[in-house]
Image (cartoon, rainbow, N blue to C red):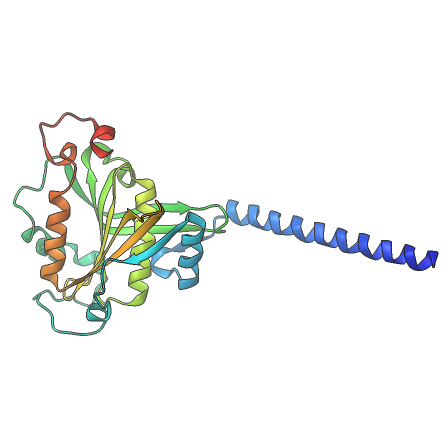
Length: 251
């Protein structure tokens, strides 16, 4: 009986030691992954990654209304004469920026500037890697032009084709830049032909942060949304004579 009891105690001790070792390895694994240089581009983020990211940040995604995303995801009639060529999207900046500027007010602001191909890194404890977001076009407060992600106001991601991956990329880029910026941030994704998606932050009735996804059907809707967003920017960004009191303006 004594031998049996001793064996039982030894077995429990062995299980406890194994559990401790497993827990230690788990913690060390998390630390190593947190300190590692492993990165995932926002354009390659998976559905599972997005769910984990939302959980860690205590946010959730909510549609703006009942508009079906398939209206812009699948080939359909276009209200734009824009045409992509065979080169990567960034190399066609001159063409697509003409389209964007032509649909904005003549004088955007002398306090804002477009910055192409701007990156923001997203580090979230527990995620195990850095998410690297890169905005094709970033509208930045000129005071922050040397640290554009910190002064970002609006980001535009250009895609030849809009897919489910484009939606995940848009959400990931929104999260990355909104956390990096000192200003309220808006992320847009478009193919310059059928419209696109807008991502911005709100709070629900319980005070929880919500990432809103708004489907913009057609380029007319896209440009109207962008114009409205620009008109709603705080005066400290759009009025050359405004007193620069950013914190008060944005509260």
